[in-house]
Amino acid sequence: MEILSKPSVYALRALLYLVSKEKDKEFVSIRELSEQLDISFHFLTKILQKLSENGLIRSSRGATGGVILKQAASSITISKIVMIMEGNDFFDKCILGLPGCGTKKPCPMHAFWKETKSSIKETFENTTLKELGRQTKIKGLRLVS
Image (cartoon, rainbow, N blue to C red; front, side):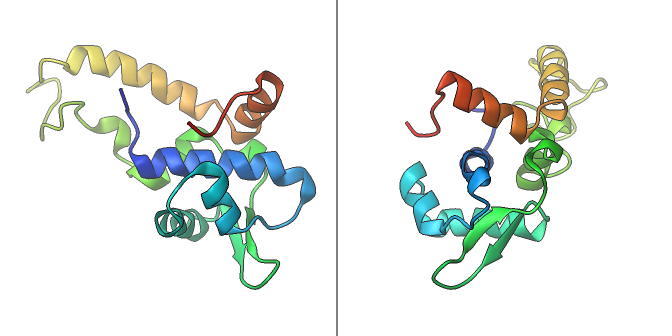
């Protein structure tokens, strides 16, 4: 089951890859990101552009260009990334996609989803890229299928 859209998932994976390279303090080429994460170059470019427009990464052109984190990984929450990619109303949407879903006109999944999304939202708001990056490194977690 996927809760997040592909752009959100790819944004998270790309940012976590940058966190893994952060100690080098060098730009990572978009081609490297695309190849290492098995994401279409053009699709990834659009995702990175959105992250750049929202101040999470900085890009540079040229032979040594690419992208790098603009903010400290400890200040970037999963919630911030999801809101950029999914929109500020992400946690207000009906899981079945029904407009107007709420306490007055609930869908069959409303009560369940209300409780679940509250828990997910809290976790996303309290988890940073730095923490996920640390867990990825310590536990040898993967970013590619």
